[in-house]
Length: 230
Ligand SMILES: NC(=O)c1ccc[n+]([C@@H]2O[C@H](COP(=O)([O-])OP(=O)(O)OC[C@H]3O[C@@H](n4cnc5c(N)ncnc54)[C@H](OP(=O)(O)O)[C@@H]3O)[C@@H](O)[C@H]2O)c1
Image 1 (tube, rainbow, N blue to C red):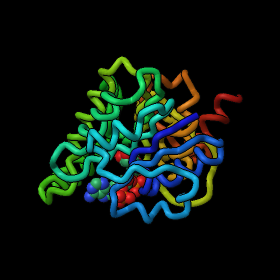
Image 2: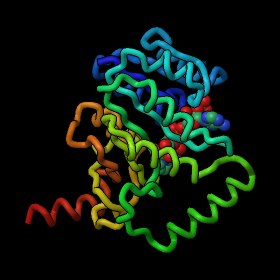
Image 3: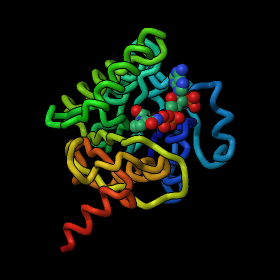
């Protein structure tokens, strides 16, 4: 399989590069020119397309001929970076490609998610501070996902919980809605977020889903598994 990883030089991106190479996939990575050196370890194994992830020409070249596209969706700045990235992928990916996008729990596909008051307060305060400082525009990640959800292409939007570094704990489990008890622990290893993204490329049951993920070894996931077994 030929796979394009958009945002390949970041933490999530580099884990996805490794998971794809482990599976023998051919990899094209898009990253900012200043970050190409962060992919030095993979230099002989992947093709790199340097450029901003919302540069439509860069994306058009990078996704050509790819059966899968893994996009790290991040709303940097206040100039529609996330929606520009998503739109370029939707416009230029091969029509039958599997498109997997990353985001956080704050994204809701159907408005049925139930958030704690603490989560909503933190989101509001952090979002306001980030936008005031012109660093991040969370609303633009919401807009990017709105466009993805409206697309007839074969997309999956993976909603990551709070992330931590460390050894893999295995493929995360998922649920359709925030608030479901299985997700209560709200923690996933970043390496396993990447694993879920890469596994989604070949899991057709995830097409047009927005799985919210959590570590399979977290307390809430283990409690759910024990309950299901009894
Ligand atoms: N962090 C969390 O706790 C968390 C929780 C849930 C979900 N998520 C989701 O996980 C995904 C990855 O997030 P992450 O926090 O783990 O970060 P990450 O993997 O390090 O990815 C950040 C990406 O943004 C790029 N970037 C950094 N600064 C930039 C700038 N000023 N302009 C343009 N691009 C820039 C990085 O590229 P360079 O290599 O060029 O810097 C990298 O590709 C995102 O979709 C996020 O919504 C994160």
